[in-house]
Image (cartoon, rainbow, N blue to C red; front, top):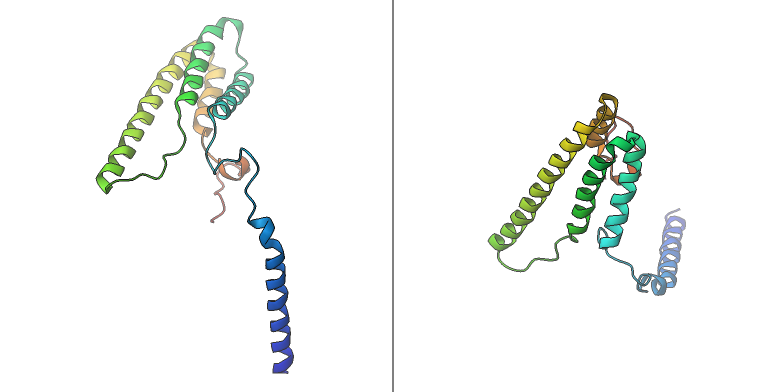
Length: 162
């Protein structure tokens, strides 16, 4: 009985080793040309994503001709900020204090950007109807939530634990 179980285990290990050996050449190949590490998006990618989000938002808000000036000003702030967002910080060299100061500077820049966006949002909100403001408020609350898993979580549901 033990020899049969041992034979099966040994056979499974041999099969696994053979499959892994066969797959190694494919796994060692470089990625497709132009492939970037996770989260590294080009300026054009970030601008396209921002424009897609703005288009979706404009459709939800049903922007009227009389509101176009406020909408264009808001859109310009969003697009300008998408261009200024740099790639993730590279591996930092230096002592702990230097690394933390660099992170703090980046966070300060993010805070300035959020304040500019808040000001632009307030100006847009002033040009909207009460119904449109409700949509804008909901959009602001939803932005950034559920980014992982394609945003497929319903209201009040938690993302699965990793």
